[in-house]
Image (cartoon, rainbow, N blue to C red; front, side):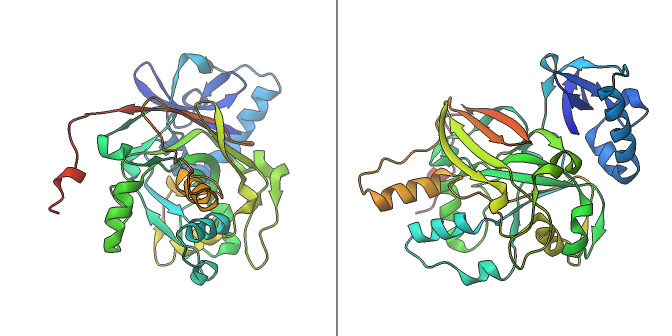
Length: 331
Protein backbone atom coordinates (compact mmCIF):
# COMPACT_ATOMS: atom_id res chain seq x y z
CA UNK A 1 0.00 0.00 0.00
CA UNK A 2 1.17 3.50 -0.88
CA UNK A 3 0.25 6.49 1.27
CA UNK A 4 0.71 10.13 0.30
CA UNK A 5 0.44 13.52 1.97
CA UNK A 6 -0.76 16.39 -0.20
CA UNK A 7 -2.22 19.89 -0.23
CA UNK A 8 -5.81 20.25 -1.39
CA UNK A 9 -8.00 23.33 -1.03
CA UNK A 10 -5.36 24.87 1.22
CA UNK A 11 -5.29 21.97 3.66
CA UNK A 12 -2.77 19.22 4.32
CA UNK A 13 -4.37 15.81 3.77
CA UNK A 14 -3.44 12.16 3.50
CA UNK A 15 -4.67 9.35 1.28
CA UNK A 16 -4.11 5.96 -0.28
CA UNK A 17 -2.50 6.15 -3.73
CA UNK A 18 -3.72 3.64 -6.30
CA UNK A 19 -2.81 4.22 -9.92
CA UNK A 20 -3.52 7.83 -10.83
CA UNK A 21 -5.94 8.40 -7.96
CA UNK A 22 -5.70 9.39 -4.30
CA UNK A 23 -8.37 8.15 -1.90
CA UNK A 24 -8.51 10.54 1.09
CA UNK A 25 -8.43 8.85 4.48
CA UNK A 26 -10.71 11.57 5.81
CA UNK A 27 -13.52 9.94 3.83
CA UNK A 28 -12.87 6.59 5.51
CA UNK A 29 -13.71 7.68 9.07
CA UNK A 30 -9.98 7.84 9.81
CA UNK A 31 -7.60 10.73 10.55
CA UNK A 32 -7.09 12.92 7.51
CA UNK A 33 -3.37 13.55 7.98
CA UNK A 34 -0.29 11.34 8.16
CA UNK A 35 0.58 12.27 11.77
CA UNK A 36 -2.94 11.27 12.77
CA UNK A 37 -2.62 7.91 11.01
CA UNK A 38 0.81 7.17 12.45
CA UNK A 39 -0.30 7.98 15.99
CA UNK A 40 -2.88 5.18 15.70
CA UNK A 41 -0.95 2.99 13.28
CA UNK A 42 -1.41 -0.39 14.99
CA UNK A 43 -5.17 0.12 15.15
CA UNK A 44 -5.66 1.73 11.74
CA UNK A 45 -3.28 -0.25 9.53
CA UNK A 46 -5.64 -3.28 9.21
CA UNK A 47 -8.52 -0.91 8.36
CA UNK A 48 -6.41 0.88 5.76
CA UNK A 49 -5.50 -2.44 4.16
CA UNK A 50 -9.16 -3.49 4.12
CA UNK A 51 -10.16 -0.27 2.34
CA UNK A 52 -7.22 -0.65 -0.05
CA UNK A 53 -8.38 -4.14 -0.98
CA UNK A 54 -11.96 -2.92 -1.44
CA UNK A 55 -10.76 -0.24 -3.87
CA UNK A 56 -8.71 -2.82 -5.78
CA UNK A 57 -11.79 -5.06 -6.00
CA UNK A 58 -13.84 -2.22 -7.48
CA UNK A 59 -15.72 -0.65 -4.59
CA UNK A 60 -16.23 3.08 -5.09
CA UNK A 61 -14.65 5.51 -2.64
CA UNK A 62 -14.15 9.27 -2.85
CA UNK A 63 -11.05 10.01 -4.89
CA UNK A 64 -8.93 12.76 -6.43
CA UNK A 65 -6.73 12.77 -9.49
CA UNK A 66 -3.11 12.73 -8.30
CA UNK A 67 -2.22 15.31 -10.96
CA UNK A 68 -4.59 17.80 -9.33
CA UNK A 69 -2.84 18.05 -5.97
CA UNK A 70 0.53 19.15 -4.64
CA UNK A 71 2.40 16.22 -3.14
CA UNK A 72 4.16 16.91 0.15
CA UNK A 73 6.70 14.83 2.02
CA UNK A 74 4.82 11.64 3.00
CA UNK A 75 5.59 12.48 6.64
CA UNK A 76 5.46 16.30 6.47
CA UNK A 77 6.24 16.91 10.15
CA UNK A 78 8.43 14.10 11.53
CA UNK A 79 8.67 13.84 15.28
CA UNK A 80 12.43 13.63 14.67
CA UNK A 81 14.82 12.71 11.87
CA UNK A 82 17.90 10.54 12.28
CA UNK A 83 20.20 9.44 9.49
CA UNK A 84 22.27 6.26 9.65
CA UNK A 85 25.58 5.14 8.17
CA UNK A 86 24.67 1.64 7.06
CA UNK A 87 26.51 0.98 3.77
CA UNK A 88 30.07 -0.26 4.23
CA UNK A 89 30.83 0.28 0.53
CA UNK A 90 30.19 4.02 0.81
CA UNK A 91 32.17 4.44 4.03
CA UNK A 92 35.12 2.42 2.73
CA UNK A 93 35.25 4.28 -0.60
CA UNK A 94 35.02 7.70 1.04
CA UNK A 95 37.86 6.85 3.43
CA UNK A 96 39.98 5.33 0.66
CA UNK A 97 39.54 8.50 -1.38
CA UNK A 98 40.80 10.53 1.60
CA UNK A 99 43.75 8.15 1.86
CA UNK A 100 42.79 6.94 5.34
CA UNK A 101 42.17 3.31 6.31
CA UNK A 102 38.71 1.84 6.81
CA UNK A 103 37.60 2.49 10.37
CA UNK A 104 37.12 -0.88 12.14
CA UNK A 105 34.42 0.50 14.44
CA UNK A 106 32.04 0.58 11.48
CA UNK A 107 31.57 -3.16 11.93
CA UNK A 108 31.10 -2.90 15.70
CA UNK A 109 27.88 -0.89 15.95
CA UNK A 110 25.49 1.17 13.79
CA UNK A 111 25.62 4.94 14.14
CA UNK A 112 23.39 7.87 13.18
CA UNK A 113 23.13 11.62 13.55
CA UNK A 114 20.15 13.91 14.09
CA UNK A 115 19.22 16.30 11.32
CA UNK A 116 16.67 19.12 11.22
CA UNK A 117 13.21 17.54 11.20
CA UNK A 118 11.71 20.96 10.43
CA UNK A 119 13.56 21.05 7.10
CA UNK A 120 11.92 17.91 5.73
CA UNK A 121 10.60 18.46 2.19
CA UNK A 122 8.89 16.44 -0.50
CA UNK A 123 8.97 16.64 -4.30
CA UNK A 124 9.49 20.05 -5.88
CA UNK A 125 11.79 23.03 -5.45
CA UNK A 126 14.67 23.04 -2.95
CA UNK A 127 15.77 26.54 -1.88
CA UNK A 128 19.49 26.93 -1.28
CA UNK A 129 21.52 29.85 0.04
CA UNK A 130 24.82 30.97 -1.55
CA UNK A 131 27.01 28.98 0.85
CA UNK A 132 25.03 25.82 0.14
CA UNK A 133 26.27 26.01 -3.45
CA UNK A 134 29.83 25.63 -2.22
CA UNK A 135 30.00 21.92 -3.13
CA UNK A 136 26.27 21.18 -2.97
CA UNK A 137 25.67 17.42 -2.97
CA UNK A 138 22.90 14.85 -3.13
CA UNK A 139 22.86 11.64 -1.10
CA UNK A 140 20.90 8.65 -2.38
CA UNK A 141 19.23 6.85 0.52
CA UNK A 142 16.08 5.14 1.75
CA UNK A 143 14.28 5.94 4.99
CA UNK A 144 11.76 4.35 7.33
CA UNK A 145 9.12 5.92 9.53
CA UNK A 146 8.21 4.57 12.94
CA UNK A 147 4.58 3.53 13.34
CA UNK A 148 4.71 1.69 16.65
CA UNK A 149 6.25 3.49 19.63
CA UNK A 150 8.82 1.76 21.79
CA UNK A 151 11.81 1.96 24.05
CA UNK A 152 14.79 -0.41 24.35
CA UNK A 153 13.60 -2.25 21.24
CA UNK A 154 15.55 -5.39 20.39
CA UNK A 155 16.65 -5.76 16.75
CA UNK A 156 14.76 -9.06 16.51
CA UNK A 157 11.51 -7.20 17.23
CA UNK A 158 12.28 -3.88 15.55
CA UNK A 159 10.78 -4.47 12.10
CA UNK A 160 7.33 -4.53 13.73
CA UNK A 161 7.85 -0.85 14.59
CA UNK A 162 8.30 0.21 10.93
CA UNK A 163 5.26 1.70 9.19
CA UNK A 164 6.92 1.89 5.77
CA UNK A 165 9.80 2.96 3.53
CA UNK A 166 10.48 6.05 1.41
CA UNK A 167 13.22 7.49 -0.77
CA UNK A 168 15.48 9.99 1.01
CA UNK A 169 17.82 12.63 -0.41
CA UNK A 170 20.06 13.91 2.39
CA UNK A 171 21.21 17.12 0.71
CA UNK A 172 24.65 18.28 1.87
CA UNK A 173 26.62 21.52 1.62
CA UNK A 174 30.08 19.99 1.75
CA UNK A 175 32.19 23.12 2.36
CA UNK A 176 30.11 24.06 5.40
CA UNK A 177 30.06 20.45 6.56
CA UNK A 178 33.82 19.90 6.27
CA UNK A 179 34.72 23.19 7.94
CA UNK A 180 32.54 22.72 11.02
CA UNK A 181 33.45 19.05 11.45
CA UNK A 182 37.09 20.06 11.94
CA UNK A 183 35.83 20.91 15.43
CA UNK A 184 34.51 17.33 15.86
CA UNK A 185 30.92 18.50 16.07
CA UNK A 186 28.19 18.17 13.52
CA UNK A 187 27.21 17.88 10.76
CA UNK A 188 25.04 20.92 11.36
CA UNK A 189 24.85 23.82 8.88
CA UNK A 190 26.12 21.49 6.16
CA UNK A 191 22.94 19.43 6.50
CA UNK A 192 20.15 21.32 8.23
CA UNK A 193 18.72 23.26 5.28
CA UNK A 194 16.89 20.44 3.44
CA UNK A 195 16.27 16.72 3.63
CA UNK A 196 13.91 15.32 1.03
CA UNK A 197 11.67 12.28 1.46
CA UNK A 198 9.01 10.85 -0.82
CA UNK A 199 7.22 10.68 -3.07
CA UNK A 200 5.08 8.33 -0.95
CA UNK A 201 5.27 5.94 1.99
CA UNK A 202 5.26 2.26 0.99
CA UNK A 203 4.09 -0.20 3.64
CA UNK A 204 6.04 -3.41 4.20
CA UNK A 205 3.32 -5.67 2.80
CA UNK A 206 3.94 -4.22 -0.67
CA UNK A 207 7.66 -5.01 -0.40
CA UNK A 208 7.37 -8.63 0.74
CA UNK A 209 8.46 -10.02 -2.66
CA UNK A 210 11.68 -8.00 -2.41
CA UNK A 211 12.71 -9.21 1.07
CA UNK A 212 16.14 -10.80 1.38
CA UNK A 213 18.17 -12.04 4.31
CA UNK A 214 20.28 -9.62 6.29
CA UNK A 215 24.03 -9.93 5.85
CA UNK A 216 25.95 -12.45 7.94
CA UNK A 217 25.88 -11.68 11.67
CA UNK A 218 23.14 -9.07 11.19
CA UNK A 219 19.48 -9.08 12.22
CA UNK A 220 16.34 -7.74 10.54
CA UNK A 221 14.67 -7.36 7.18
CA UNK A 222 16.47 -6.20 4.10
CA UNK A 223 15.15 -5.59 0.60
CA UNK A 224 16.56 -6.19 -2.87
CA UNK A 225 15.63 -2.80 -4.32
CA UNK A 226 17.59 -1.14 -7.13
CA UNK A 227 18.52 2.50 -6.46
CA UNK A 228 19.53 5.21 -8.93
CA UNK A 229 20.02 8.97 -9.13
CA UNK A 230 20.21 11.20 -12.19
CA UNK A 231 21.00 14.90 -12.53
CA UNK A 232 19.53 16.71 -15.54
CA UNK A 233 18.70 13.39 -17.15
CA UNK A 234 22.16 11.85 -16.75
CA UNK A 235 22.47 8.92 -14.36
CA UNK A 236 25.24 9.56 -11.85
CA UNK A 237 24.65 6.87 -9.22
CA UNK A 238 23.26 3.38 -8.83
CA UNK A 239 23.17 0.84 -6.02
CA UNK A 240 20.89 -1.52 -4.15
CA UNK A 241 19.19 -1.24 -0.78
CA UNK A 242 20.11 -4.87 -0.21
CA UNK A 243 23.74 -3.75 0.16
CA UNK A 244 22.96 -2.28 3.60
CA UNK A 245 25.30 -3.86 6.13
CA UNK A 246 23.50 -2.56 9.20
CA UNK A 247 19.74 -3.12 8.97
CA UNK A 248 17.06 -0.65 9.92
CA UNK A 249 16.16 -3.05 12.75
CA UNK A 250 19.67 -2.74 14.18
CA UNK A 251 19.64 1.04 13.85
CA UNK A 252 16.29 1.09 15.68
CA UNK A 253 17.76 -1.05 18.45
CA UNK A 254 20.59 1.42 19.01
CA UNK A 255 18.42 4.52 18.58
CA UNK A 256 15.88 3.27 21.13
CA UNK A 257 18.41 2.34 23.82
CA UNK A 258 17.20 4.28 26.86
CA UNK A 259 15.11 6.45 24.54
CA UNK A 260 11.48 6.47 23.44
CA UNK A 261 10.83 6.26 19.71
CA UNK A 262 7.56 7.82 18.60
CA UNK A 263 5.22 7.46 15.63
CA UNK A 264 6.46 9.79 12.93
CA UNK A 265 10.17 9.43 13.75
CA UNK A 266 12.08 9.15 10.44
CA UNK A 267 15.34 7.20 10.16
CA UNK A 268 17.51 7.24 7.02
CA UNK A 269 19.77 4.43 5.83
CA UNK A 270 22.79 6.56 5.06
CA UNK A 271 24.28 6.86 1.58
CA UNK A 272 24.44 3.87 -0.74
CA UNK A 273 27.79 3.15 -2.41
CA UNK A 274 28.39 5.69 -5.26
CA UNK A 275 25.43 7.62 -3.85
CA UNK A 276 26.90 11.16 -3.69
CA UNK A 277 29.25 13.45 -5.59
CA UNK A 278 31.68 13.55 -2.66
CA UNK A 279 32.39 9.86 -3.16
CA UNK A 280 32.18 9.95 -6.95
CA UNK A 281 34.52 12.94 -7.23
CA UNK A 282 37.01 11.35 -4.86
CA UNK A 283 37.06 8.12 -6.81
CA UNK A 284 37.33 10.00 -10.11
CA UNK A 285 40.32 12.06 -8.93
CA UNK A 286 41.98 8.98 -7.45
CA UNK A 287 41.90 7.33 -10.87
CA UNK A 288 42.56 10.48 -12.92
CA UNK A 289 44.24 13.57 -11.43
CA UNK A 290 42.62 15.65 -14.18
CA UNK A 291 39.09 14.54 -13.26
CA UNK A 292 36.65 17.46 -13.17
CA UNK A 293 34.54 17.55 -10.01
CA UNK A 294 30.78 17.80 -10.29
CA UNK A 295 28.46 19.44 -7.77
CA UNK A 296 24.81 20.45 -7.88
CA UNK A 297 24.09 23.84 -9.44
CA UNK A 298 21.15 26.24 -9.55
CA UNK A 299 18.48 24.87 -11.88
CA UNK A 300 19.58 21.24 -11.67
CA UNK A 301 16.88 18.60 -11.60
CA UNK A 302 17.68 15.71 -9.26
CA UNK A 303 15.72 12.52 -9.82
CA UNK A 304 15.99 9.56 -7.46
CA UNK A 305 14.37 6.20 -8.09
CA UNK A 306 14.21 3.16 -5.85
CA UNK A 307 12.49 0.06 -7.14
CA UNK A 308 9.14 -0.32 -5.43
CA UNK A 309 9.38 3.09 -3.73
CA UNK A 310 8.78 5.39 -6.69
CA UNK A 311 10.53 8.38 -8.26
CA UNK A 312 11.45 11.50 -6.28
CA UNK A 313 12.06 14.69 -8.29
CA UNK A 314 13.48 18.00 -7.07
CA UNK A 315 14.79 21.17 -8.68
CA UNK A 316 17.53 23.26 -7.06
CA UNK A 317 16.78 26.99 -6.86
CA UNK A 318 18.80 29.88 -5.43
CA UNK A 319 17.60 31.96 -2.50
CA UNK A 320 19.19 35.26 -1.38
CA UNK A 321 22.37 35.80 -3.36
CA UNK A 322 23.89 38.39 -1.04
CA UNK A 323 24.38 36.62 2.30
CA UNK A 324 27.27 34.34 3.22
CA UNK A 325 28.09 32.94 6.65
CA UNK A 326 31.35 31.60 5.26
CA UNK A 327 32.36 35.23 4.63
CA UNK A 328 31.78 36.05 8.32
CA UNK A 329 34.60 33.80 9.55
CA UNK A 330 37.03 35.60 11.82
CA UNK A 331 40.00 34.18 9.93
